[in-house]
Amino acid sequence: MAVEASGCSGRSSSESAIGSFSRRSSPGSPVRASPRQTLFAGRSWAPWSGCGLTTSTSTYLHRPDPEIPIGDTLGALDELVRSGKVRAIGCSNFSAEQLADADRVAREHGTARFTVLQNHYNLLHRDDDEDVLPLCRELGVAYVPYFPLASGLLTGKYRRGQAAPEGARLAGRVIDEDQFDRVEALARFAEEQRHTLHELAIAALASTAGVASVIAGATRPEQVRANAAAASWALSVEDLDALRAV
Image 1 (cartoon, rainbow, N blue to C red):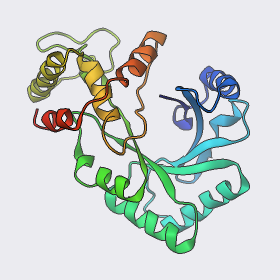
Image 2: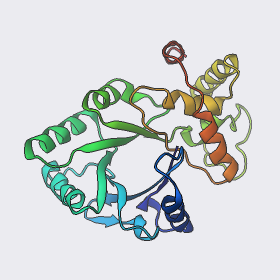
Image 3: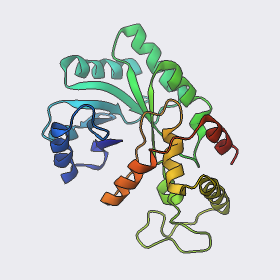
């Protein structure tokens, strides 16, 4: 499981905690601290400075910028890698076409390649099954899904016909009946395997070929422990095939 600090949401006390953990943890630790930098169009934020570290494990291009040629972006990122300020570069919210183009340009220009892709992916949102995930496996790019719990829909906290818990992310929003149909079907699948819906949501992604890690948010220590424990369930290829039919 990776512990990550991102500049997307600004600085927080978590950065100093992650920096302290990173300096004390060993390379073989099952939990890795991963301070990173996130680049947006025209600006960047370096959270590792708040971690007390001088090197970022990875720098991500948060989204494609249609106004800047990908070769220019890769050239700038390559300078960071060559200078030793970052170890690897990644991208986020890329389509298969955009990832393939970036990889081709990097190879042609001899610059650093994207080694990891972060995209929106969960058991209710599986668009990347068709092209992005297969391409990542072909290129050797690690795939890291975010929103694996679908804003809590895949934790079991929302029930058909009941108000959302106070303070929940989807409180006050209308959840479609077909969403509940799918969630309930997934919950039955998990129960048949003697697991919870939450465990299935994490484990199924972690068991998918090409997925390197799963980004799951947490606000309490017990949630972190539950997420890490869920990833220990390894679904078989047959399980994953059956799950796609749910």
